Length: 498
Ligand SMILES: [Zn+2]
Image 1 (tube, rainbow, N blue to C red):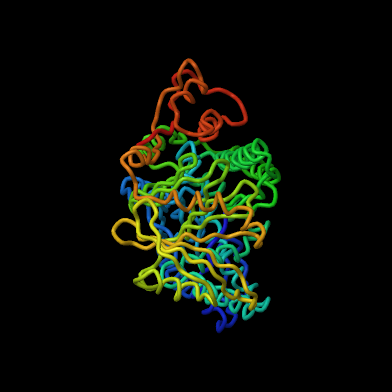
Image 2 (cartoon, rainbow, N blue to C red):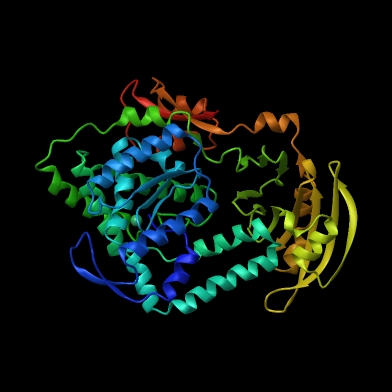
């Protein structure tokens, strides 16, 4: 788990900050820091606003209240009970959790789907509280300042400006710059992660949860890693190096061992309350799983965005990648793609304006056309990239439902690759459409439901599931990916159209 956002305002504020002697609440030692506690709180509050711009808060009061109450209980028993703590569930399918200095903790609904009990979730939250109580964010800010933060800030701002030039304007540029920033930030150090694990275990014990649940959380992560690697192997691809909070931990095996030792220390003397498994499952029943209708859904080769009323179909063998900034339809080799982006209003009102303002072509020609009854303009030409090199520019502007503008841009490794993929790129492009009745019926988001473990086991559950790799995925979300079977009639999570 890591702080995976770069609060730009925070970085800039630190440029002018001088070192202050601050007592570390966990170690009790005095350390030189770029931030006093007051600054930490103020910067946390500022960066929190940026998080809210980047992510939607999950619109489910029951789940938010539950997570906040659990977080407040854990924080009250932490090394910094004096802070005002904020716990927020983000509407994201990513498996992630992170914290900001000053007492802001976030978990995604994605990570919640994989936790099996209240105690597991308490382990995740306890770990994040540990990053805050041990002042890891402030420590990192301090070391970055020492390492020459000026260069760091300049790079990020450069990326922001460049993306505004390329992407048009407004919202689109924001999304791009945030992605650039998110990829730029370094994760916490190994020692800090291990310390946060240890603090998580300690806060579990102080709240009468068995600290071994911290071990469960790491096991869930490990299984997630194995599942991703198994899927990649099945598709003949190299194992993913991991993103999100899997990437931030050098060795989950080593982490697991350390946590086991730490948990054993606490387990000697304390009696634990129940792990809140049933309470937890009932609370997350009905929660969205995977992408939500607002984010657009990938179903097989199709992409549906109910809120915008648009759909696309990828050519046979191509993959769909849906992110906040764009939808990418990627060829099997991964060296050519069609990119779909909504055009921000500020980029222009007409197709010609958007092409001019958003892409600044140096040459080329436009041709009016129509795609599935929607008014479109095809542009073929060239522009200069950031290095001053001439590069091909192939794109189509479409007026979608409600006259909202979209750009479909062809992208490839080089000119020859673009040429070789001409036919499937065109096929992908011309699949753009206003959602049909059939599309609407297929565009049902998924939700978590509960079901007693049937006699026929996971294979029986899988038969009636809409998940693409149902048996493995159902094992994974229920903690049985590494083998083993639930007890007969044990309550399990399943995923069905909502
Ligand atoms: Zn962490």
